[in-house]
Amino acid sequence: MIRHILVAIGSAHSEAALTIEKARDSGARLTAMHIVDRMPW
Image 1: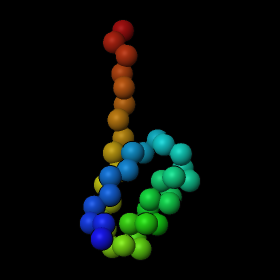
Image 2: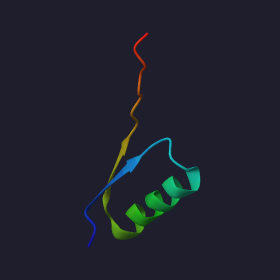
Image 3: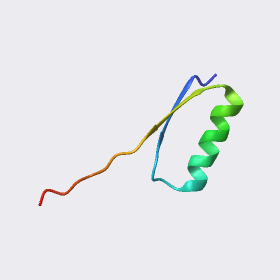
Image 4: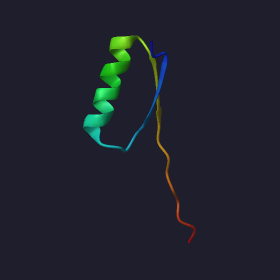
């Protein structure tokens, strides 16, 4: 049984939607993470 799912925000929207649905169906905790890669100027 899946207890915790980590999903990267900014990936394909359909992929994120499937992950959310999977978390709901299994009762798992969902953590979304958005990483911004900043270029040094």
